[in-house]
Image (cartoon, rainbow, N blue to C red; front, side, top):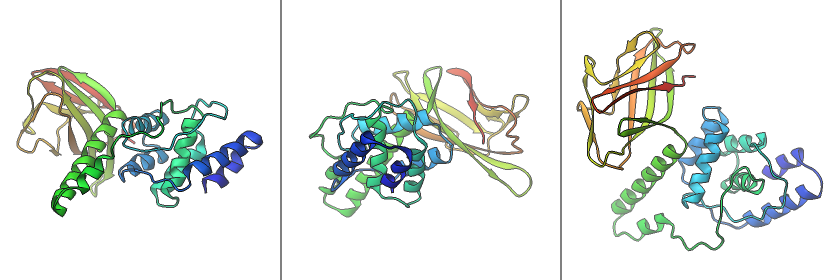
Length: 278
């Protein structure tokens, strides 16, 4: 499908070389693409993350051998932006319409055309981390190992594609939000963060209850208390350089025309993080 799409967007000898080259490179290759990468492709296609975030995430995956893309040789003109057909392919791949190899061809094109700048070393001897899991004795051990690798990969990808906000010794990586309507005119807003302690010692995030919490959502005039969060026991201890996922859910009338901020009011640091609600 990708070859057919390309035929509509390019012509001449350069594109002929590109199509033939990409087909020969991808044919018969095995690709290691974690299933959760499809979430990013879907969000990008739906406009929930922008071109820079998608490109940055893919670049990170390739640089850290999380996604394997066969090496290519630059033989076409450089581009400064992601072509629309690559975005369409990402959406089709996320929906299961095209194969992994077709998706990889789109990523190859981004590397080919200079949209993604990365050094890819042919014949890399870097071991696939999943292969270590399959050498374990029991199915339970294998499953635990694979889940841990997927969790770590998802963590790295979230950090790579998120906007960082340093508040005191903690960096908050804003990884997006979800807004769902409720029956009574209110909405359920869930905000996703990765938090990382940079202090060199343990840091505690504290939120005992709605009346005693160091975190809130602001609409510019009023503070909205949380409904649920990851601090289920009223606090969360962060170990140095060990990032964790933290989600906050708010239940209120959410006006998308307003500018919302997530407020941090800890003894170790205060600040606000702008929240984009769509």
